[in-house]
Length: 89
Image (tube, rainbow, N blue to C red; front, top):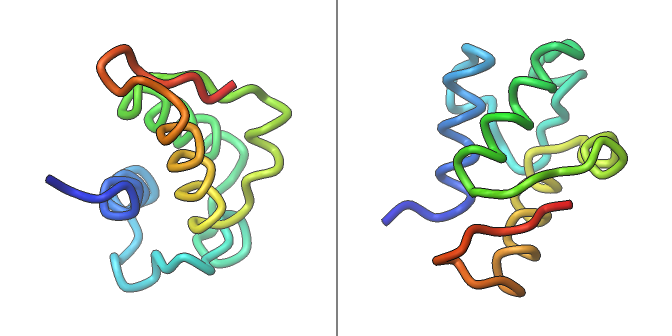
């Protein structure tokens, strides 16, 4: 089973069409991975779909790096029942 980090990295590589080696925990979505606002909306939607939750617009704006996204998801997963999905909002 893939870790949260691996799953998030796979999503980013697929959606942003960037080489996997560029997707580090410190990579910034806009500056390092060259994501525009539409890319970021699609990324949040895919993460919500993959992990079964909702990320509020306010929270999404605070997530600026790959590591922050992974940490945000893991924090919410630990406090929820994975059989029922997670609430990221």
